[in-house]
Amino acid sequence: MKFHLHTITSLLGGLLLMVNPSVLLATEIIQVSRDLPYPQDTPAADNIAAQVYFVNHFYALDNYSIQKRGKYRVTVIINRAKGNRPTTNTVERYLNNAYRDRVIKSKDLTIFRSGKMRGTGMLITDYIDDSKSQQYIIWLPSLRKVRRFDQPAHEDAWGGSDFTFGDVYLRKPHNETHELLGTEVFEGCLKMMHIEPKQRNQYMRHLTDKASCAPQGHQVYKLKSSTVFPDWWYDYRISYIDTKTFADYRTEYFKDGQAIKLIDRDWNPLPGYQGSDPRAIAWGYWYGLNLDTEHETWAVIPPEVVSFNSPDLQEALWSERTLRKIRR
Image (cartoon, rainbow, N blue to C red; front, side, top):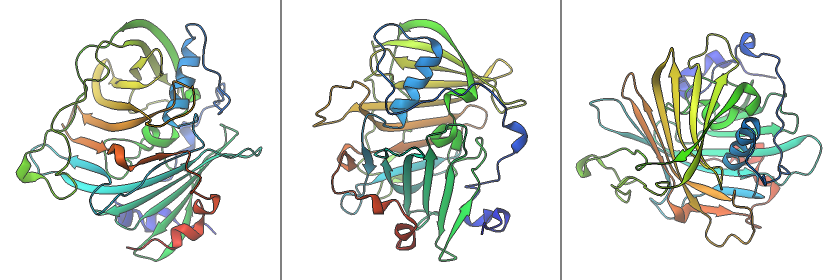
């Protein structure tokens, strides 16, 4: 039995809202699977979008996780409104792509370990059929119950951040039309949040105060992606995508010709990776900035918390039982 979402919206701080069926349009489905081949020549725009989706969902790997290491070494999500002190949530995430059946593509487990969402767990099941909605199962620590929800709206904020559910989970290549604007050299460094030492709590003390300049000088595709949803919060995005790894370093969002939001992503190689797929890379951080309000989010993944292709992660981890065992 499904739980009525509006009764617990305040508990999740706006984490989920019901999806609006009126924005789900019939369009050509661009299927992205783990078998998506690496392109040998300059790919078409739709294929570039599919490659970016492949990279961001770690399809080159059987599993990927960002686990807590010690007391304070953990992925931290920092939010800051203009003129305010930063606030933090910490999170662990476990992604399993090792499903070879005809139904399930992946399962994604997220557990918030501190902050306002402490003790909240979320299990997302994605399906082989990209036209099928994802399944969401949430552990609500204040109720000590597991509840099933319909897929949230793409534009809803993920965990109160500047990242939407569309940015993190939901947006698939067929939700936009794509146009390759050409290639160019990425100039400058990525953006990040600068935090005064006196404003750093225990989870922020080890964070760098220098932005990543890793993409500088890399050849990138400039891809314009226009939403198929009517009256949407943005009209199109322009992404700067590495021509070798398909890492999307920067995405700029536009509405009525004006830039409204920016997301920068720092990407790192996977130490010890034994495969040959250049798309097997991982995030170092995400930075998001709302250009209207100047609210910003910085999600930092320390390299020591990253694991991949781990034989120790059993399939039973991605289950309701795991959610019920979460401690607040």
